[in-house]
Length: 225
Image 1 (cartoon, rainbow, N blue to C red):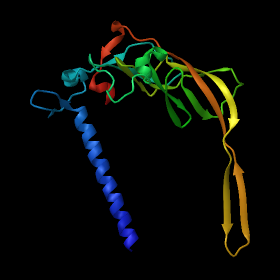
Image 2: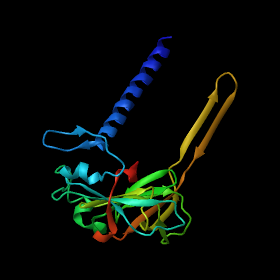
Image 3: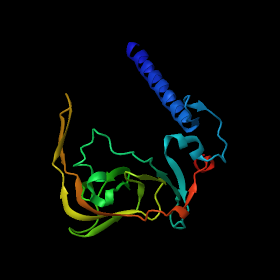
Image 4: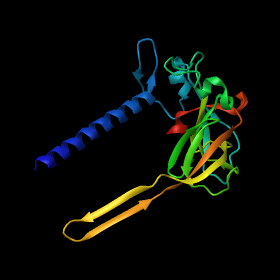
């Protein structure tokens, strides 16, 4: 029974860690920055998020645009970064696409099936097999988030009007892997091989129109409740 008790202790530890993380997230959404430190408050649904986070310099808005009726998406959340919120000193700016100017300094998080990819213009991405010939253009309209040095956009679940454009560079198979099965004293042996089909694409463009100030409305807690 030693292994059973050890398993239960492992699950109990994981549950405690998950509970502490959930409590930290709840407190971060209901704190008010002040000189004396964060104070826990009860925020009503009509409370603007900016009133609680204004001291940090980040401003939260809802993009007031006409949504595509064919997509089940809510208005995206637009976040303005504080002035001087530059890249970390640990980041190599020569290789950082948000600094060196590639793709207008944007990145996008796209969804492809159950997987997500963070891409910028010029990136080479390996995906599960896509339909299309080499040099054909493909589009990824399921953009979960966008960002730059000055702002970020969070989709709910997708960012309306955003898409990433790529060109197919290669249709191929991965290196072969071998699967060996054996049952002792049964005379059973099997050796199988598998090569996963994949598509290599080159990100050429990230399309999205940055909203004007008159298209932004302050984010209320009722929008994220």
